[in-house]
Image (tube, rainbow, N blue to C red):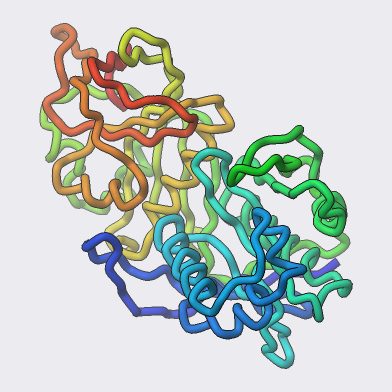
Length: 376
């Protein structure tokens, strides 16, 4: 089996998304025995066009598309870059490690309605050499060992037997069918328990970030370590508000040291009179030395996938006014209805902004939301 190496390359370029300044993600590089993989970049659109977008035999399996134009390739590269900026992971350009020839695109795509899936688009000239399997294995190692995702999915159009063979070889289990991009697709699922055994474990170079899950609230000592003497943001933006303890925690570690965490609880809430399973997020803490590099957005993205695995239909959090733009860039929306919270002196309508992220296809509440407890 191939070992995988992960390195971080400085990438100081910044860009604007929907009018707000966001840092472009660090250049996460995956290395296997034969491959060099880095985030898809805008300037690679010509190579992407030649290898993938101009190939009918490849594009027909990408939601049933036909070969596209160079402008199609440019738009797809823009989408890939935007995905990296939102989640901190995404699709990789796959290159030959020796010649740097562009071989295709393989990576992790977060789709709100489905979760994180692994996808392949390999140049026909490079097919039949195990490139998709080798790159896919590296992406699954990243998903489970570094990001701490609870599950990864695969979606394949019926008849695409080569892709089915790759997913099966990587350890995927069939999980029924679904509708994706208006087409019936075969659905596959990966989790930690179904990955094939390795004869050589994946290797990570020092400097990477690993996310780990633990049951229970954020530990006081972890909270103090991440605050590092700075005031607690929650106490500054919501003075006097009583919060409930988190039931689940994700911790991001850099070079073995905690640098950020997020907590959440799963609870039934009432949306316009209907019971809805909700992941209540709170305790998003990032050490000041690691702010502004996308750590929080990746933690939140992974937390949403854990909430999905816990059958949550939506996620909800109390948001200070100066953070609304940040969460809006991550796909969250301001709740348009009043939100009732539980406090020691009785129920009250929350005076702060509340935002939601829909995991399932559910309508926005229009009349009221009852948290059925204190905020997290």
